[in-house]
Length: 341
Image (cartoon, rainbow, N blue to C red; front, side):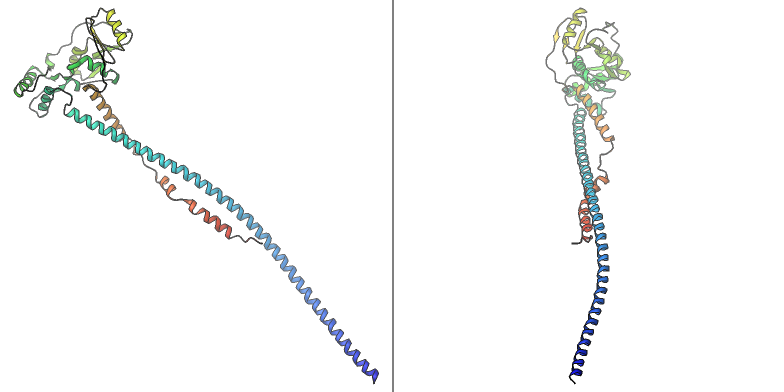
């Protein structure tokens, strides 16, 4: 019985050992399965990690490209903003210049219209002619001629009060003008009937080649053909030269036989007397008329220019700022990337 009891105990112990071995074998099988699963997961995670690294590199490249785009937009916007500012400044300068020229031309035209700076008698006769009460009045000599700017002072001085002589068709027209001035106590004026004007008829010296000589006065003045004889009679024997040294030398050489005027308005008269002093350019009626013509030409030329406008593309480029969107785009690129820890 004792032997049987021992056998039973040991058999039970063996069963327990077998069960434990079976459990161990089972656990080993489960662990091996878990190991295979973990190995597969490790491979998957390594692939994901490599993909994430590739995405990170691409994202970093995108960020660099976006930053370059931002720099390009910044440079382009700054360039267009400068162009806009330059165009705005040019528009302001163009407008101011045109306004200044137009205003000055209006003032001068008003002065010419009202015969400002003319003597009272001339002004009254011309106003009466404008009303149609005096007919066949062509106007003061100053209104009928023009010359280059650099000769304007010389011609003004040479013609003197003759610039305000009133040109009319014939003697009867001049007579009616004088009667009008007598009747209205308007002062005195000189009338030049075209029918009474003849070429001065004298021979003048050939001064070509003389130092500082520009020409005789009538050669330097432009006028309508009908007034040629008039201008010839007034300026035909007056030489125009550079300065007093040239004028004195020329006058002395030819025996003080004709009058010479310099560009700045000094006179060497026939006979040798000298007349001169300071002169103010643009102060005379001829200079003023010249300036009016120049101002009107400038104003007309300025008005013909195409208007300066800022192209819509420049406005759009400055007002639409792509930089407001680019940085957020960069952040979105960064946020979309899975960066493994």
